[in-house]
Length: 280
Image 1 (tube, rainbow, N blue to C red):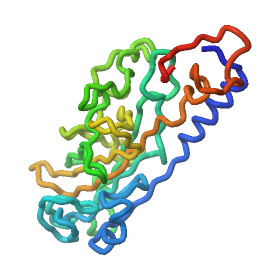
Image 2 (tube, rainbow, N blue to C red):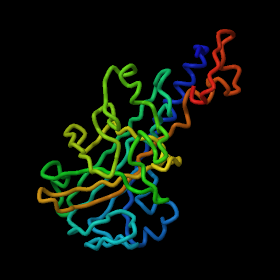
Image 3 (cartoon, rainbow, N blue to C red):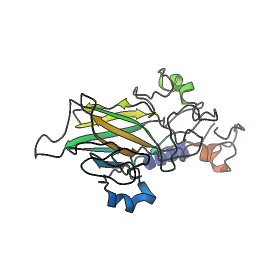
């Protein structure tokens, strides 16, 4: 599709600015905090970041010095621990934007989400950040509605969430397996995937997670949750937390430039081609 140059530059700049309004925060979830936040973020918060004490009770409360797993969810830690560590996790932006379902024309914003974490010793006043000797992983967690987002390919009804992987070779000159992002990291699934330590930034990270805003049942979800877990070399859980990895396809080019968008100012004087596909 042809567009007016000035309008295109404005729209692209507006989109990128809207997707770069980063924010992060932490929340120390206790039983009292959970009661206050049940309606908003009982799984760790929709504010882009969360923390837990080492412990918790999955039957509705939490415990700073241990607990037991059960059938429900707590506001953070969901495995019994010894209480010596705190795990902090956050997304690097307030909202990650992506181009949507269709990448057959061009791409400005591929599916690309970043997860950061720090494991902190509670005791002492020095060397509190744990930088080695542990394994920190991420995996999909149920949203507040109980729904999962474990793949960016097809939903449970065999509807394609995005055709990004069909065009990634032409757009980014690389070949990627399904559900693998541009940095080689996978979409959060039920199989834990590793974070790696970045000594420059002094944090654990998993970059380029190719998330889409669709649950596995096809419903829209701009705030998918992931669970982050820290374990020692013997596999003992040191701490866990849940965090939102926000992703939106609301701000993309088709809103103004789609064939039937209704915005005549976004069309050139001549040479306009109409496509019945609402994504184009």
